[in-house]
Image 1 (cartoon, each protein chain N blue to C red):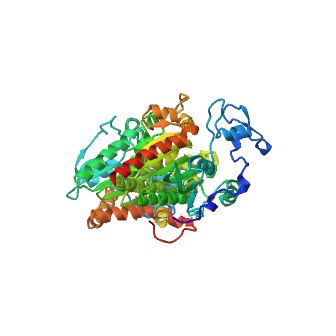
Image 2: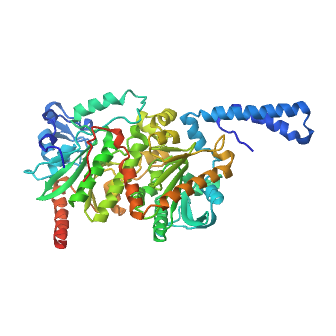
Image 3: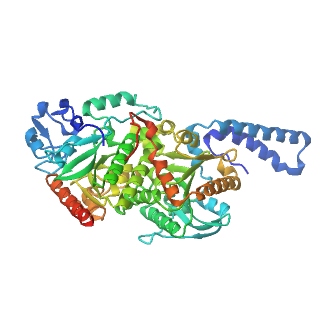
Length: 294
Length: 327
């Protein structure tokens, strides 16, 4: 594994700046409106409550860094890998809506990210784990060549070193601007997961809001254990698109975590406050099993 | 008989109409009419070469979606003998949008399967316009396991606008069904050859096309999302589908250039629907040639090559990729 852990943390300029436009933060993050129920909350209460609305329970999107801080042990370092990989625009994509190149530069500035996934290793409750954390702010968490490569690399390292893999998804799917190259990343990551499964190294999926399209139809649905955050939209085709294409009105719950649980697609729904402990419990079960084998 | 139904084929249709007018006269054709007929026929061929040699991406989309284009059922009929259809996923139902089974290809037993769109309205409804449900992917999964068990090569024929986007599909786990196929196909211990015969639409196509070799018919397409969907997603209006198609690089030629496919199989002049027997013969001979090559590899070698085939995809699309050994 390469790259030093220190630089992996976000630039200081990011702290306090609210990335999520839907969050409608006021200056200096004094007050925040819940994006769902519009309850007005004190910024510090919002942060302390892990961006979960105390009134309606809405789990707002987290940045990759916030997710990592939430999960790994306080005293441990997150050792990021492949931090500098960026797309070289393989299709020389001709967009009708201005150049995507300038959009990317802007995104890099506002998010401190070079791509929509952050990958590295960390410690959860004393146990090593490979982490793949997607960040929806960066082009809707879309998967292109870089995302596919970083995830595949992480899977390969985890398989080789026999440490469990945790992927937290947040993505609109494959990145249109990279065409079939992006589509094929679904196959690439799934192929690496096939080898991981063959090797008997555990793979945990955490589905977060929102996860749709090609990401759902590949690594997001291939976990040994799959859990979701409450209310997370998780679908192949999102409910809005189904309604439009089929000209029907869907029941309210279709496409959300609770619906997936009821239909046998996932193992559980976990409140953000219990997330780390839940994952730790699982990791210990696998760790004990691995120890018993050796 | 030739068929010219597409908007950009107007000139071809006009000449063809004149030809047919003369041909109707049969033996009563006068000398100067015979000369004219000859001229028209030459004109038509020249025009066809001109039009079909320079198709725009959007025109290619139209040819790939041509209602008379040969479907999986045509290819199976024309390429194979003793086709024995295997139906159902043994879990929920039998998706008619997937047609597959055992067949004899040049004397060798294979598993052949593909997307089926349906020719007339009734068939199209039965086949859900070619859009597979989860049970379709699970039928494929069953056929893949079957092929592996009996050491049979797998041939998949791709022609799907996209996986079915309905409520019942979400209920029964369309995403999981596709994902499982990706994983299983990547490690299936028998050769897999995919031929894109029409539309390769998104994850719905990928779910039956993780292969050792991917071949595309000259006027077929393979897309990350249908041009209409992509335009709606990127530019909020599906009316920009042609621009999206162009920008996403979806033709066989584009994908060969990007080194995502192994071979382009030429189509008869004017598209595959003009001569189904000819195109089926071309597809068959290409499949047999690739199969012979794959047969020479040991299973371990085959699987390693397949893994690397996918492992490498996109690496040239990355700046700052460190060179060096993977773990």
